Amino acid sequence: MSQYVFKMPDLGEGTVDAEIVAWHAKPGDAVTEDQIIVEVMTDKAAVEVPAPVSGRVVSITGAPGDKVAVGSPLIVFDVSDGAAADGGAGRPANVAPDAPKPATPSGAAKTGGVAAASAPAASMPAAAAAARQGRVMASPANRRRAREAGIDLSTVAGSGPGGRILRGDLVAAQSRPAGADVSAETSAETSEIKVIGLRRLIAERMSEAKRNIPHFAYVEEVDVTELESLRLHLNLSRPAEAASLSYLPLVVMALTKVLESFPQCNVLYDAERGVLVRHRAVHVGIATQTSDGLKVPVVRNAQFLGLWEVAAEIRRLAERARSNKATRDELAGSTITVTSLGKLGGIASTPIINAPEVAIIGLNKAIERPVVHHGAVAVRRIMNLSSSFDHRFVDGYDAAAMIQALKELLEHPAMIFIPKVKSK
Image (cartoon, rainbow, N blue to C red; front, side):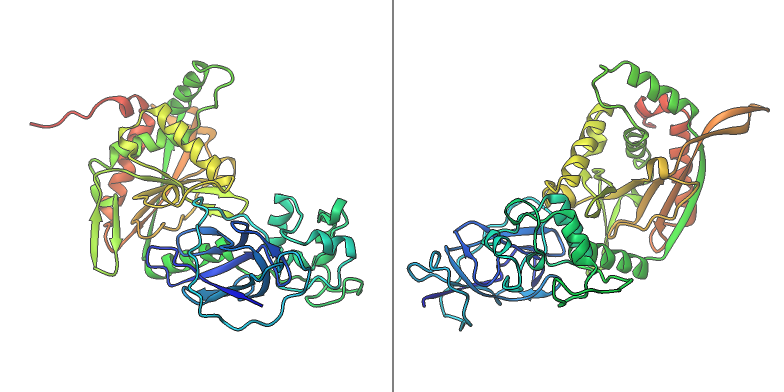
């Protein structure tokens, strides 16, 4: 048997290891060159790694959630003639001295995938086992459900055509203890979900941000009645099939203007060097909820974009993030973040800073309620802005002044589009 040892590739940007998110091949599987064999995640993004050669999988290293060091053996192939067609089971492998062929990452920062296979398929029905030669058959939605539930799809007997895994199969698999026979009865009332992939990365970054950054929260009430009037008027001026304008692009436009006077809030903190990197360009991160967790695609150079350009870019990036097509560059490099819970916005929130930034602006729900306006009680549309600042570098006075300036623009939205008069 001629073996090829493929090692964890260097995925760039100082990566020293990568977490196994999902295997798409298992011992005994025949794979072809460039077939996706494993999905891994670094601190930057998820990457699908293709097979460097054609052959039969002899062994794999690591289960979903395990980290493998760059340069360590990842998967061993039998590349002898006929290995890809002989149907034999994988045998224990010795690491061969062959130099590994570099893998080509998928390029897209995808976080979808399936917790595929490190367990043998011997316990599966014959039809389902035959269908496992290669990638497990399951819809993207069921792959996501399996990943969130920590279910290894290679251990699930699919009841659909050709062994395809259906939602009912996942429900049945989740109800039995790990390692139990498929037919075993169980009365388990709990299930364990392994924290891996993007969810693990989110947890680590949130913990690190909350642990290391002394958050200063500031909430201000904003009368967005005029902003709502402008929004509705602009939507009426657009073709019926055009996407509706939300508050978010208007807030981004106002924020870019406010940051001209508060550059200390458009900053990244380089902790290793102990340096604040102040940016002239405004790269606005847009916190976006996806089926895989929270992602922050970036509207770059927002200060140079018009309203409709900002709106279109936010929609484009959100769609790419939710469909797992956003690239690494589209998910990195923000200098300040805006987050919105939309209709679920509540009265107030305390957003966590997207490190290494020093400020984040949160939009809460806009509702109509009676307020005193020009000395009389009137029904106005009110929305709270919930912001957080890194109190090490942004003083409370500056944070409050910045939000007050943002409030003024949002309450008098025509000012958003009037060029700032420079003093002589």
